[in-house]
Image (cartoon, one colour):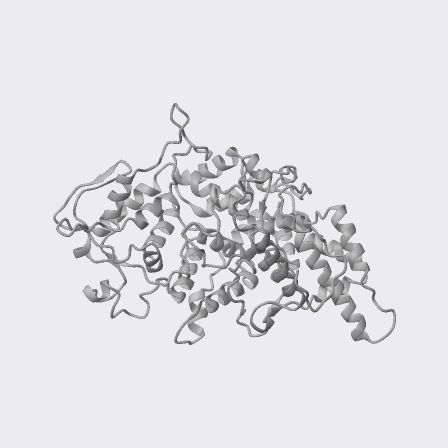
Length: 553
């Protein structure tokens, strides 16, 4: 570990052994009883970027269900507005990170903020692709937030027609087949919208388990012919223009909002031949109907029986636990199929089902060593900033890319591929998790380098701040006020970071280490304050470096 300005005694030599084997109990409670502070903190670990004193009080006062209701109707502040307000001729990726971090940490609509991150890991675009506009990426993140609690069919259509998705998965300006030249429609989006965004590779039961043939082989959901047929649907769309022309189809002479307004059809480029996919055939025609064909395709995908378990399980993994039981998946998928009022795809109902399910709220299940998920690095940093009231000197939250493996190994909207930074079905092949056939998606970006990168990044962030000029930092006012009592400081770390369930072992090490920083009984107040601040920083770092923190339960 690199040296920082602060010398921290007693830091855990092997604190960062990333193994999902900590069995610390976690507060549960029923949905009808007012949650305890620990139960509220645990709920917030699943529904926000982390607990704060204020958020814990809000959850305790309203209860889980009402808190969700309040969150879902909160107005959305857009990243597009933030980026436009910068009044810059060219928006950079760092500008996008800044507005996303600001809202993730300070936004009152925390459930929407977590859902934007979760959905961006399913409906992936990436600013690493030169075709993806930075301001367009910010607007795309807005889109995910705007439709996070809407109907999945609407969300799917909005994602499909977004020009940044069109650029990233190369279906914008996709043209119909031309037998004379051998030209075929681009199949990229047709493949990925099935594989990653709606139905997956294999047919699923309602509980997410894979259907097999009599020989035990998984049954595929689609074939190469299905991809080719669907690709014909995704032809003849390009940038919005009030006066569409051949030039605007190719990306020229565009209005200023074309990078984030939904793409429009250009019928002359749309395939008129027969299109067969997933058991549906759109007959050949002499008159191109791009909007009609698109509706049939998206309706077909939306109504496929795989969508409920496929999307539901991924959202459970992103918010609650990497290995939900088949019964949990089935309950959520059942709500996707019918919200109780005959409506399919009600995302508000799905999110509510995920968060209020007994497997999400049960303290008994949370104590199972196989329960929970590795906190992804972006959530960890956001949790630090929220829990300890971090502020931005500039107001711009100037945190540049954290994707490097010597940093967090992950940044918003900057995945290395359409498969995100990690896949939902990943299991570490040489670890105990893999041997038990347990999934651990976030472990795909964990190795010796990223482990050290996280520790070093957090040590510096906690001690000095993070970002350009250490723009984002905490004064630890509440923690310093408690630091004369190491046990009181440990209690605060336990509640804000560990849902009130710090183990006796970690507590003992933390109290011992904090107590080893002596606080002068006399001398200048500045000297005393420095010692108390160093105690607070050490307590935060030791807790956030522990396996107990790294595994969200």
